[in-house]
Each structure stands twice: as structure tokens, then as C-alpha cells.
Amino acid sequence: MNQINTQNSFTPKVPTAKGRFIMGNVQDFKASPVGFFKKLETFKTPVVKFRLAHIHCYYLASQEAVQQVLVKNNKNYLKGGPFMETNKKIVGNGLAFSDKELWQRQRRIMAPVFHKKCIDSFFKLMLDFTDQFVENIGQEKSALDVHKHFNQLTMDIATQALFGTEVKKDETDTLMTNFQVLVEESIRRTTNGFSLPFWIPTPANQKLKKAIKAYDTTMVNIIKNKIKQPGHTMLDLLIQAKDPESGEAMNPQQLIDEVRIFFAAGTETSANALTWTTYLLSQHPEKMKQLRLEIQRVLGDNPPTLEVLEQLPYLDQIVKESLRLYPPAWISSRTNEYTDSFSGLEIPAGSNIFYSAYMLQRNPAYWTHANSFMPERFAPENQPDLPLQAFIPFGAGPRKCIGDRFALMEIKIILIRLLQNYHWELKTGFQPKPAFLGTLQAQEGMWVMFVSRKG
Image 1 (tube, one colour):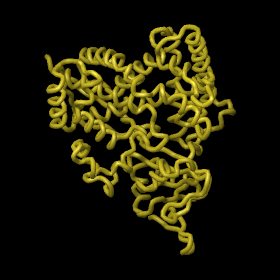
Image 2 (spheres, rainbow, N blue to C red):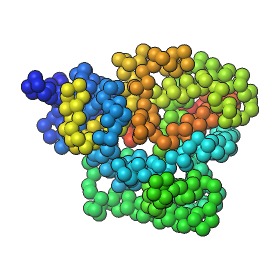
Image 3 (tube, rainbow, N blue to C red):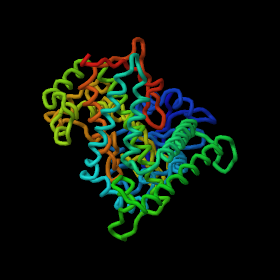
Image 4 (spheres, rainbow, N blue to C red):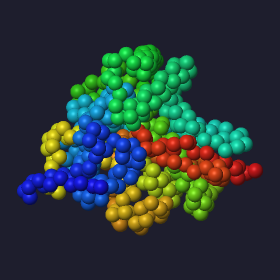
């Protein structure tokens, strides 16, 4: 049963969810993150306090509170807290995790690299890999875990975009093998909520340190060779990019960290988005048919072009609605430097603050038929009525994901080619289960049967 702590009428205290004596709300959160957050939202206040063992936390339960943190008062909120710090140690202090002067500098340096013109230059690369992917799955005679295949496809695209053909295969294999260890450890440590400090020589810590060292050593060699023989890859652009204010370039460690972040944000998250979109279309064959008709009308069986992507409004609506229902980055956190107030409820400086795109984007207070797949809600004529402040699949404000254009272009190309070539259904008897980990994954994969439309 919920319990609210009260203070005097002049300074109302943030309502607090009742928890167990030692572990607080850990068990409730682990059992069902969505169920737990729904309970917090029953307080009907913009912020609710809870506890994960010794960590005191605050949950942002309204779009106004989230916008205050991400947009209106964003300078007060840093990428801190125990969960962020764990990820920083593993993935590195790249753009997604850095703060203040370092973040501002890195953002200035990287902005031209992620400009529309630069991202659009990777269109053909994405299309070529997608066509090979489409051909490969056509050889499968039984249901396959499409998430596993999407993950490999997005990894191949990211690898080629970053390094090109100049980097040796054994080097990219080393990077991918060790990067996978980093991702698995990041998920394990943030999901468990407690891990022994890095300096304690446990087998898990030793394995992680070895993977980080192997990854960094390989990256240093790749960077050195790229400096000697420049090319036209994303890594080349990052090496050559300079801060417009100071004229300085990134040092090797910063380059390594940014590449790690790009892999983390540009592979697993895109694969998850594609996985859940594939699922939603399988459950709504009338939407799949409508989207295929749009693609057929505009493209026929021809491959897409950059210009054509802008001529497929229903595809855009499908992708947005899928990202609304299943945002890959389903939960995020911040730490505030100074005390802040939400409708008179104060959060003290140095607090651990959580918000969830998944919860916000399914909140019936903002969305009509919040749990239903209704792509038409994003149609141009419905835009004025959309609660866009409650739509944050890529974040919002100055720290909105810098790679959103890369991800959306990749997702749309892959969906177009799949729909031109296949019809699909879920494997008989299979029902996917969301896994609320570091990203929103399908717990047991996504088992899909593809049938060629040309057979």
C-alpha cells in the first residue's frame, strides 16, 4: 500500500513510496518496472520518491517534470548517479555520458560529423548491406530470431560506416568481440543494481578489464593507421574534426570513447526499434498492407533513394508510433547540481532522478488509446493535437540524441526492402516478452517466419 510522508504546508514534501526495511523498492522494481512506475504515478504528483537499497531516488511522473529536466532547466541536470557512473566506466566518457565543458566541446566538434549532409553520405552503404541481408534471410526455411539478425546488420553497417574497408577484419572482429563483453557487463551491472568495485580482482572484473584493454589497444592502432592514411569514413571525420572555438581536435581516448558510444547507441537501439516494428506490423496486417501499398505506389520494386524517404509519410508514421510504444532507450537518469522544485515539491541537490520514455509515451493522460498501435495519430492533420512533450524516443533539449537521423534513415531503408520482398508472421505459438534492461529488448528474441512475395 502506498504511503505519503507529509511535512508542513509551506514546504510540501515529495510523496514517498513505501518499501521494505533494507532493500526499499528493489524487489518491486525488479519484479515489474512498469508495474512499479504505474504505482508511483497513482500519487498524481509530478515527482515521487523511492529507494533502491541505500540509493534514494526520484521518479518524474509528468511530461512537465521531464521537460523541466531535459529542456527548461537542463544545465542543472548532469549524467550522474551510480547507474550512469557504472556505464561511464565500461563504455567510456563519450558524448552520451560527459557533462559541462567536456560535453559542450565534444558536441561542437561532432556536430558537423552528424550534419545531414554527412549522414546522408552513408545512405548507399546502408542500402547495400540491407540488400545482402534481405537476400540472406530469404534462404531461411524456418522461423528465425529477427532481433539477432537485425543486431548483426546494424553492427555491420556501423562498423563499415566507422572504419570502411581499410581496417583489417581481425581488428574489427577483436573490437566486436570485446565490445560485446562491455555491453553484457553494462547490462548485468545496471540490472543487478550492485556490483563489486572495479579494483577488486573478481573473475567478472578481470574479464571486463581485459576486454576494455583489448578494445582500446586495437582502437589506438586503427587511429594511428587512419592518421597515416586518411579515408572518408566516420572515424576519419572524427579524427579530422576540430573545436571551432579552440581549434583543438579530440585526443585518442576521446575518440575511443565516442566510437564506443556510437556502437552502443547505433546498433542495439536500432536493432531493438526494428525488432518491435516488425512485431507490431505482424500483429496489424492491415497496417502492413497499407504501408506496402504506399511503398509500391512510390517505388514499385525499385530501391529507395534519399529523396523518396521524404515521400513516404505513412512509413514515417509507422516508425514514430513504434518508437512511441517501444522506445529502445526506455529509461534514463540524471543528477541535479542544485535543488530544484516541481510544482512546489523540492528535490535536493545531488539526487538520483529517473524518467521513462516508455511510461510517458503510454500515459493515458497524454495519449488517446495509449497502448494501441495507431500510426495515424502522427499524420500531419493530427500534429496540432499531439502531446509532443510526451514523445521523447531520442530524448529532448540540447542533449537529444545526435545520431537520430542516422538511426531513422537506417530503420526506414531496412523496412522498405523487407516489405518489398517479404510478408511475415510470428512463429506459431510464440509471444514476445519485453525485457526492461539497459535497452528495451525482446526477452527471448523475436521469432518470425518470412515468406517471399515473389515466390
